[in-house]
Image 1 (tube, one colour):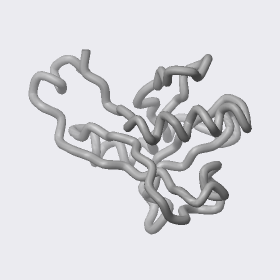
Image 2 (cartoon, rainbow, N blue to C red):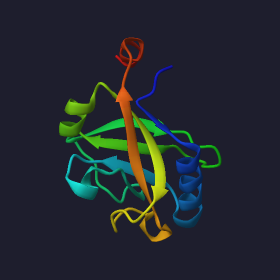
Image 3 (spheres, helix red, strand yellow):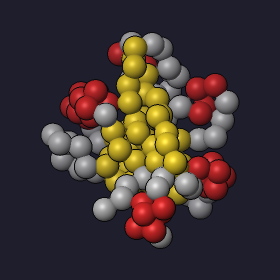
Image 4 (cartoon, rainbow, N blue to C red):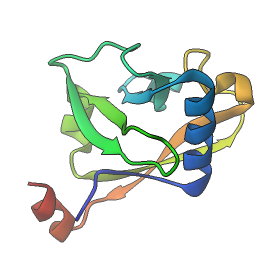
Length: 123
């Protein structure tokens, strides 16, 4: 089954660590500039989602008891609806609002176009 969002092993390890330290997590990908275009990790429900947001995935991360939701602004989704996203984590300082910032790492998105078969499965 096709997915819109996957995670690297390094990102999954950071998600487990953040979940253990803070509690249930969520991600939101906005269409802003600078760090606003990076995936932001929050406590589940800390970032209010609504009609202007699209739930892309409920990520099942081994060792995390509940799914980690991954949201995107609807405007951004219109531009990225043909794109597969992979959440990764790299050394560096990201936005101060994302939970991983104090850890000296930042989440980032690696992307590729979805295949025709993936698009058909997701429709």
